[in-house]
Image (cartoon, rainbow, N blue to C red; front, side, top):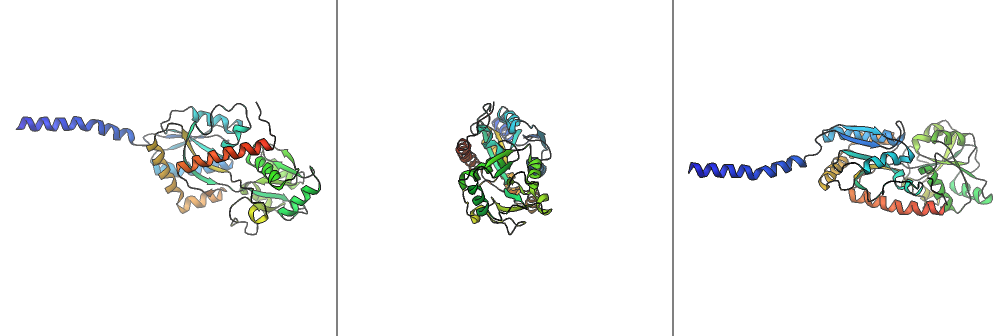
Length: 325
């Protein structure tokens, strides 16, 4: 009897080993997570990434280490993640450029859809249409009328070739059916300075980038791409209210992993992310950084990326913007 009991116990222990090993492998995360942020430090995307990573480190119980890999409109950092092991320990903090740059460069070494697994959105930043305080146009209809009266004379300042501000200006041009000249600047600050000095007639910018000039009275805001009026600009209409509902551009941020990352890891991460984004403190911190919380399932984020890829492909083709080498 003792012998049989011993055999049964030993057999049960042996059979339990694979289950225990599987449970240990399924635990995530077991070590620090490397978060590739494909932009330079200090910008809006980097700030939002650091806010999210700091809190996620606490929620997940492992440090999320920021690794800024700027260059080529986000392509350099994004490629690192596309080629990384699909184990959940190298992630990408993606932003709107992810669905724009594939159409602006001939040398994108990855597929923005197939080479990544969506993990969840973090937020989106509405754009504001800013004009010099001296511009006689006081609303969108008057700006459109000005552009139609003198084709090519109205100039849009774009904070960087292929950036969301540039693409938003092209969308404005297409939706309003106007002939507008686009002037490319090397960043948001030079574009805002040119606007304040009336070198250009309007600039699409994120609220944080434009707020100093707005508060100083150097520029005025005609409309915002948000779905509802912004609480800190309650008198500014949305584009839908202003008569141009086709301008629906909201630069987003979110987490992507390499394709083939296990579903269990994606599900766990998404749950932690969405739970964190419901916290009032996180909502406030992201709002200060100019980002409205935007939660999603992995499937919804993947669908958004595919939709934007199709949309921006059409916009960039219609704008006749040629991809660079």
